[in-house]
Amino acid sequence: MSPISRVHAMGAAALCLLLGAVAIPAFARGDGRKATAAKSKSTAVAARLPRDDSRAEPPAAPDGLSVVPLAERGDTSTGASGRLRIHLLAAGSAPSGVYAIPNGVGGHPFAFIGVVPFAAKRGEFIDDYRMGFWPAEIHAVQSDAYENPAGFVEVTAENASTPVSDHFTLGDFVTHDGAPFPKYIVLREALLDKVELVLTDLEMHGVSTEHVRVLSGFRTPSYNFALGDASGRARESRHQYGDAVDMIIDSDGDGRMDDLNHDGRVDAGDVRVIEAAVDRVELAHPELAGGLGLYREMGPSGPFAHIDVRGTRARWGTADQHVYASGVSSYSASYGRRETSASRSHCQAEGASAVLCQGFRHTR
Ligand SMILES: [Zn+2]
Image 1: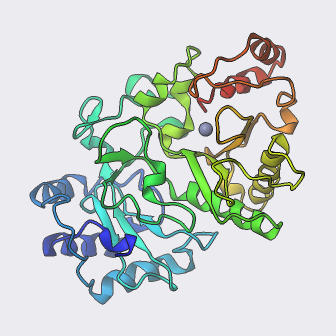
Image 2 (image 1 turned 180 degrees about the vertical axis):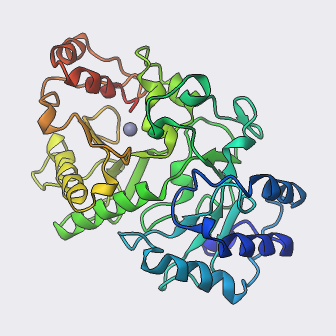
């Protein structure tokens, strides 16, 4: 059984609702941050539907489902990268679930995802899953980038293998908090699109990207805060907004970052190959601007890259920050090592870079 065939099946009522949802302009591409009109109605419908109780094949969708919404999206259905395999429906506009297009798009699997609106959160929880509180739930925030996310994608044991882009599945982005399914994540298509563009760029520069591993995708505020950054930096992590991914390229499958620059070692030089690709992609796609953090080895997976789409350019651990080569060799409380006093004092000495240095504790 292919991964996409194991999606959340939907009943006739849900299908009608979905068709209604995709036929309206609110279906336009984006995270649906402002889409709240359909919330109460669809939440009520969703409550009447059996949730996640069937492994049946998705029903064959009428032509309207596979043609109308994709026509509206034009050639952007698979993103600038051409490698997106999902589109998130406006939060609350359709019942939670993964709705596969029967024959995919352009020979690739493709699915729509019904998103649980943020308003469904009760205290720290969605259903029985602990999320914690986002900064905007606690205090006023400085910019739109820190407003509460529009909603959540429900990830179940059944839908976790759904491809969200050529290199990634839904399950790649869940918080590693040990909680059972169902779990809930914030996911942004822009992040997937950017990372796929970076991978395409790397391929054009001779780097094999056959296997890319997500070390950390979405992190709940609760989990992120538990990483233990006393500075409060964790509260602002882009990981809790579905913006960010920490990843390695591991095409040889040994569990470690590959020797991307073919110099016989796995070290800082390899993440700098990724840095160059991110810089090129941001130049070509300024709408995908964001953060790039390079981290030295602090676990068996070796050095890794943090990439995000926060909307403004940010860099830490990169060449232009002059901090990477300064002996910051163990900057992760979250990965079980203590930040060295040497690295901390160096960060303090870096002036404007000092804030970024706190990212070395891997809370960005
Ligand atoms: Zn990160």
